[in-house]
Length: 214
Image (cartoon, rainbow, N blue to C red; front, side):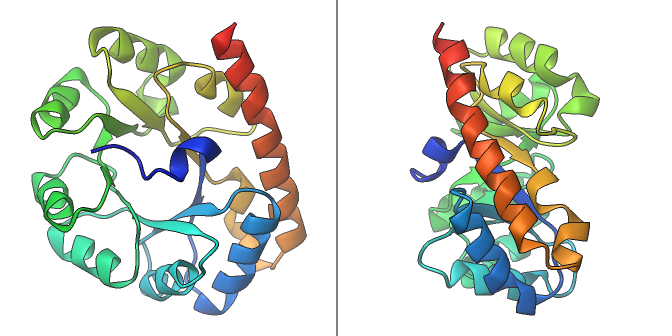
């Protein structure tokens, strides 16, 4: 199972931690205006499902559920309109339920053993998490060399500065990050800064792609 078709061209997934559904529509508008109409809404708080549902209701956003830990949360994400599921680790229950529902799933891996298990489940794209704490780009390069054809979505500790380096690697399908949707920006409704950071992130992608091609 591969990434949702609309995710590939953007190559950056804002990782959203938000507990207030009243802010969801404004956040969605800021992402769209910034040219990054995609989000992973993490299920880390009581109101996260409502945020996920509100953002998924927008026809101009591709929204997935993050921090999905079990099959019940997969069902919740599906009911809320999630178009993909992201997990911090490799859960057989999560992956199998996603496959049953036809939901693209990105389980978290950090080792060769995890990757073998992901391949055995029929997956060709995984989340590399926590990216910076698990060896960063050199670890991605090593894993990609051993597992030809696997693609990675590094997430965890990635910044606006390091994002282009990851994206320049041909095995990196996308990266996940929170710098453009930092909690303090959402708390204070700084949608203008969210948009500015999205614009800057999108602008960095072509340079990374050119570096990879060269």
